[in-house]
Image 1 (cartoon, one colour):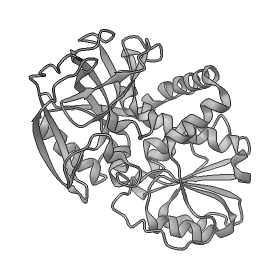
Image 2: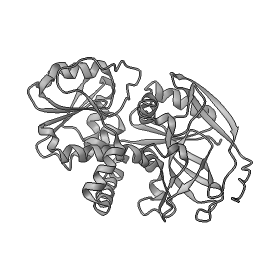
Image 3: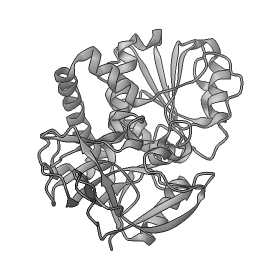
Length: 369
């Protein structure tokens, strides 16, 4: 007979949004389910909230982001990258008090079923997560991880998820010889994902021009980063030479902007890649466009591809080198702010949703006061 579950005696407070209307939200409080042998309960200590998380919500159904932390309809729990402390454990290999980093809901606690436990990581073996992308099921044991530095804890929370996307996107373009292009255009050039991509392209782009498209209010900031060869306001897309072979990387997810680019450049576009939705409220309906059909860049698939192509040691080395360059560069243009408590979570969520957080600022949140 297997041991009985142990009562957790904990309540989890979670921030949930209406999956059909991200402007509607609620706070939900419910007991954490009892722990079975091998399970742990993690208290979420801090999490970052950026436009990247709004992308998770916007594509929650299409890419199964809502399935990681299920909630009763119509509610959903937006995934965030967070650190947490193991508050209770029925796993002999994971002690209470150990710190972890990974994919969490915007909540106070999360129960995990660790599997494949290694010195620096484990995966959540919960049955409902088995069909989901494995990359998002991994949790780093940051007390033991060689690539985690407490001195850079803030940058890790905010930039590491965006950096991972940027790294594998830049690698994808380089491995494909930029699909024959001589220019890469990044929309939402002030977004942290775009800045990271532009930075990493510098190592791969001899002869490749990197152009950032942005709003007039962000032009000076984008130019200040120093990672773009040219910075162009959206209203001036037509000023770009139309005969240069171009890869379009769409981070804004704005259908009108994408249409303008495609109609201006047409068959000069060698690849059109949809990465995010920083302009999440804009119309992004897929109308017939000149040039190639936009394709969604799904990071976990490319992580698997690079692991196979490069092997884990080389991938780890290249990730480490690129991450070091990101850490060294980010203090020039990024200010991290800390906010605590449910009211702050609501306020910052509304600001991020409305696109009112300036590009040089990144909020880190905690539910505790």
